[in-house]
Length: 279
Ligand code: TA6
Image (cartoon, rainbow, N blue to C red; front, side):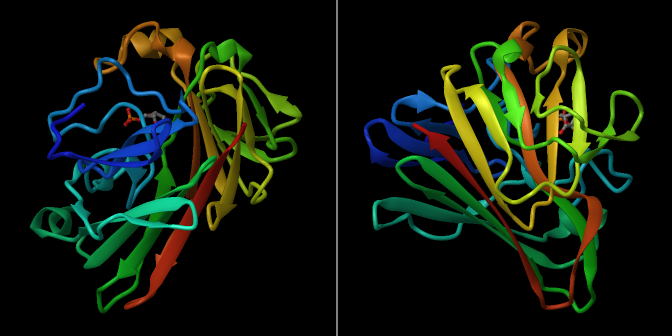
């Protein structure tokens, strides 16, 4: 999972900690009271080039296919810098990372920017804040998302609350926009849906971690939630994903992806997701 020079680890105790890979500022591990909550494929590639398959990759400046560059943008495949030393207070520990525009990013997306990503760990929660600073003389538009891979013991036991009544784009059915009529969303096939206008504190993912934990999502400025599982056939087609691993992961990803976000020249836009484990 990368050398010690590539990974920043924070620990609140011997059973609660978080590790972040500087490649993409990708969170690789979130242990909460001894429970690993995140999935990383055993075939994930750590070559500091390819996006890491698992954990919490960051999507910016474009969710999905991108005519200017790689799918899901460049943030998850660039090397970030540690912006601050870790800070401990009030029973929490946090650290920040940054990514600034460079020649490579400007070739794809000709804007000056600085992203600041703060990872803030509590005893039963993980608070993630991405601040997009527009350092250019002109406004820019983007979409962004935290591509969270939760670990589970069996995908068929995962139940997702809080999506009932929401419009969603079904990327498997070819982006047909329909309304979710289920109170509890379960997954038993290739699933790739963008749920829109989610309420800030309603989405919960049940039976993740060791298969018995409930994680609540608290969202600020992240109105969309993407639910994804490749299932059997697509899993087989992914070189950095084991054929059977679709059974032990589920992506529930908070983002602002269904509409472009605009950052004014010299302005900042912040996005925060707090994941809380119901212990
Ligand atoms: O977030 C869901 C999704 O957009 C799926 O369509 C699938 O492409 C997934 O992301 C993984 O994308 P990646 O580029 O990491 O293989």
